[in-house]
Amino acid sequence: MKRTSAVQAKLDSAAGGRILVFAQILVLIAFLLGLGFILRTTGGTLFLAASLAPALAVIALVLTAGLLVNKYRRRHSLFFKEEYASGETVFRKGDSSECAYFIVSGKAEVVREENGKETVIATLSEGEYFGEMALLSDRPRNATVRAKTTLTTEVVGKENFLAMMRAVRSTRDDVAETVKQRLAQVAEKGSSR
Image 1 (cartoon, rainbow, N blue to C red):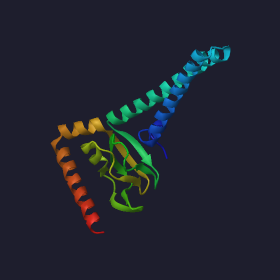
Image 2: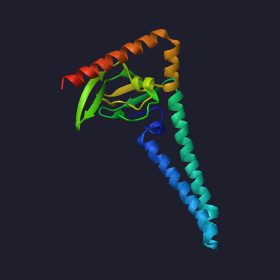
Image 3: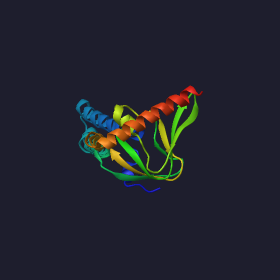
Image 4: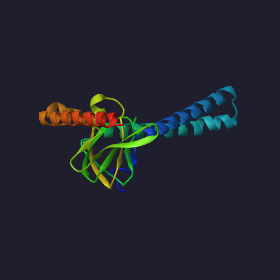
C-alpha cells in the first residue's frame, strides 16, 4: 500500500491521541526532573535537570507540533490521494471528521456494528463519496468505512469541502440529495431487522 504521506497514516484518531498523551508524559517527566533538582540539589539531579529534561521537552514539542501540523493539513487540504488495501479501515465510527473521501477506483463498504454484529449498510464505488455527513453535522463519524477492494480515494479537507458546498450550488444540491438517500437507506435497514 502506498500513501501520499506515510506520516499522515491515521494520526488524526486513536494514534494521534496516544501520541499526544505520550508527549504530555514526556513533559511531566521533564517537570519532575526539574522538581527533583529543586528538592535535592546534587550533581546527579543537576545533570538530569540540565540535560535530560530539556531533551524530553523538545521531543514532546516536536511530537505535538507534528500532530498539529498533520491535523491542520488534513482539515485544510484541497485534494490528496490515499490508497487502501482490501479490508483496510479508512475510518472508524467515532473518529473525528476532518475530511471527505471521493472514490477514484475500487469499492468501499460502510459498516455499522450493533450488539456485536457488523452490518454492511452500503457499498460505494467509483464516482461516489463518503465522510460528508460527519462534516456537515460537525460530529464524529457515524459509521466505519473500509476498503472492499483495493481503494484509491481523493481526500478533501473539511474547510475546503464546506467552502465548496457554500460556493457551488450544484455541489450543495448533490450532497443534500445524497445525505437524504443515505439517511433513508439507514432507516430502511434499521426497520427491516
